[in-house]
Length: 175
Image 1 (cartoon, helix red, strand yellow):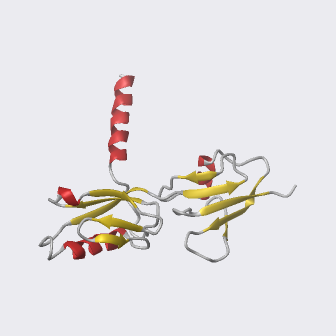
Image 2 (tube, helix red, strand yellow; image 1 turned 90 degrees about the horizontal axis):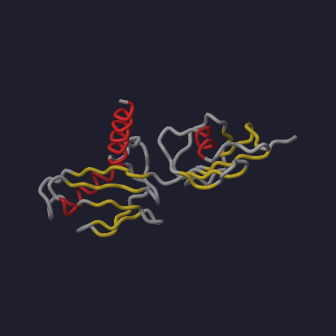
Image 3 (cartoon, one colour; image 1 turned 120 degrees about the vertical axis):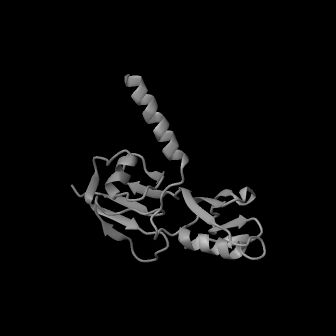
């Protein structure tokens, strides 16, 4: 009986991972994001692609399109407008995120590096992904550099929100 529940849980988990991720409506795409594009009834226009370093994709009939900085709804509208008329009468376009670009964490964590972002993530969760804090880490000297912002890094704490593309720095504490 226990094996049945385990099998059922594994099937459910695989089904969930096969679906595109549900993105925040205000989430803006950037280089490294993986997206899925579907046009109802047009299998030849389906595309799973990663945005290039310049934030573009190459889409059938429309060529190179700049998507960095746009929301999913804005991308859907852009593709709808581009395909409507010349190619399709009234295209129904769906765009979803299959994988977010990573965030980065360095400094006094056990395994610094880039990690997959998940919506709603906090600094505390990012620290856990990086193997936890070292013995020398300060819980009071945490900074986040936001992607695309040229401002000074902002002071943070373990409950601060992390976004895709962010860089978290955990400093040493003073003894």
